Length: 214
Ligand code: MN3
Image (cartoon, rainbow, N blue to C red; front, side, top):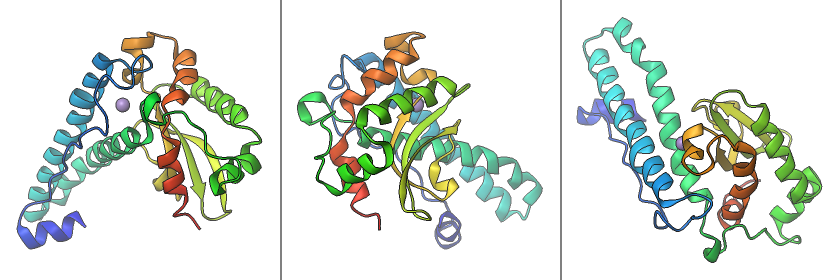
């Protein structure tokens, strides 16, 4: 898509840092105002800025038929585009506690039934996510996703800024387990963060995403 736009208009379409669907302070005390400001305004912004820079460098190299040079930017584009997508998806996956954050889907709903048949209980799902976070070395993400091949929910991890769509899965919910996502509030207590984060999960959004799955 970007290539097509580049050819047509001469420049690649720029990625834009999205606004948060809530104020910086609204996910507190789980995620404090300072943490959210840094995470969104500095970390996510850098992925956006770097993605725009690398796509432009890539585009310019392709225009000069210098594919040797262009290839140097491919991994950087993948990393920064993943960072941009993963964070944009994350902000929508959370909601303040007083705005239905953490409220589980109804057990009789399509998602409620799928959660039960795939994980048993939500407690089991949360525990499994905590185990995955503990086992994840370095930086990455926890995902609940839909596997269209076997038509079931799956809980999994990706490294760095990889995304589950690269694995043929449809993302439904993500949790950032990079240190920058919790360190300002939780220091090294990743386990505590992995408990508390579920109280700001926007299940309404997850349900909306799941409703589009076959
Ligand atoms: Mn992050």
